Image: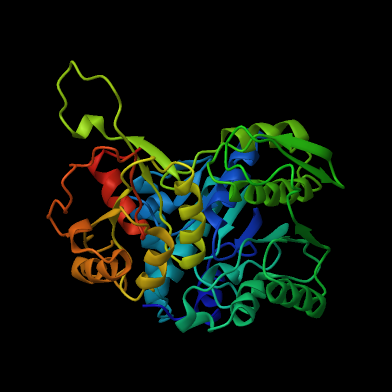
Amino acid sequence: MIDLGLTRINQLVRLLQYPFPWRAIHVAGTNGKGSVCAYISTTLSASRLLTGRFTSPHLLDRWDCISIDNAPIARGVFLSAESHIQKLNAEHGIGATEFEILTATAFEVFTREKVHVAVVEVGMGGRGDATNVLVDPMVVVLTKVGLDHEGYLGGTLAEIAWQKAGIVKRGVPVVVDGTNEKEVLEVVERVAREVRAGEVTKVIPSSEEAGTGKATVTVTVTTKELGQISSTPSLQGDYQLTNSALAIHALALASKTFPQITAETISTGISTTTWPGRLDFVDISPLLFLPPTISKQKKILLDGAHNPQAAAALAKYVDTLRPRRGGVNWVLAATQGKDISRILRLLLKKGDRVFAVPFGPVDGMPWVRCMPPAEIVQQSQEVLGERGGVGGGNERGGGKDGGRGRKLVSDFLSFLLLAVWFGVRGGG
C-alpha cells in the first residue's frame, strides 16, 4: 500500500531514540539517486566514518536495502529491528505502511549500530515520503527530475519538482542537478527561499567533463570547502559525471561537520564505487554450462531503467556499443502501470529483438505487479513493426541468425527483474 504522509512515521519514530543520534545526507530525485547515494556512502566509509545507507527497492532480500559500510546488514539484525518496530506499531495502533515500517527499521538499525552518518534515499517523491521524518540533515541532494509516479506526485515537472523539493529544510544547504529543466530549478529555488534553506548549489559539469560516457573521463569540481577535487567515476554512463559531481559537492559540505572527509578520500571514493544492476556488465558464462575448452566470457548488460528519462540515458549508452550488423537483444520485464510504449520507442531500433519475461511476487512490496509479457510483446511489435523480432515468456524469439552479430543482451525495465537475476547467480 502506498499512502504518502508524515503523520504515522512521526508517531513511530518518536517511540525510538529521537532525534536520531547520527547525522544524515538526504537524497531525492527521479533518476540518479542510487548512484549518488553509492558515491557518497563509499566515500564516507573511505573517510573512516561508520556509514549507514538506506536505498529502495531492495535488490535481492528485503534487508539488503539497508547497509553498513556498503555491506548489506545481516538477516538477523534486520529482523530484530523490524520486529521491534512492528510491535510498537501494533501496540500504539499507528497503522504504518510497509515502507514506513521499513524506513523506521532502517533508522533503528543505524541507531543500534552507532553509525556516524546515514545516506538516505527518498522512496517516492519527498514531501510526503517516510524518509522526510529527517528534520536536520547535513545536506540535501536533488538529482535529475523527470516524469514518473504521476498518479502520486503530479502530472507536470513543476508539480513533481515541488514534491521532490519537500525535503529541503531551513538552514540546510542544497545541492541540485543543474542540468534539470528550467521549471524544475525554479521550483527548487522557490522552495529553498520559502523555507530559508542554506545555499543552493546548481551542479553542471563543464563541456570537458561530459559527453563520452567512458569511465576513463576525469570529473573536476571546485568546492568552497575543499578546493579543487578530481576523480574518475567508476560507474558507466556520461550522466555519472553529473551524479559524481553532485556527490562531491555534498561531501565537501559534509566535511564541515566531519573533517575526516578530505579531497583525497573523496577522489578515492568516487573512483571505487560499485552499484550493481546499473549499466552493469556481468559474465553469464557460468550459467551456460559451456565446455571447458571455451574460456571466453559471455557478458550481458544489466540496467534498471524504469522511466522515459532513464530509458533515454540507457539508449544513448547502448548506441555507443551497437554492432555494425545485426541488432541488440533486449530481455525486458516491467511493472504494471509503466508507460511501456514510450520507453520502448526510446530503446528499440530496427534489427533489435525483444524477449519479454515475467517476475514473481516481491517480498515486502505487495502492491508491485508484473506487467504481462504479452503486453510487452504487443507494444514491442508495434514499435519494431515486425513480429519476427519479439518473444514472450519462455519463447526463444524470432530471427534466423540465432543472435550472431549481436553484441549485447541487455536491459530490464524494472529493478525487480534485477533481483531475479542476482538470485539466480547467487548474489553478488
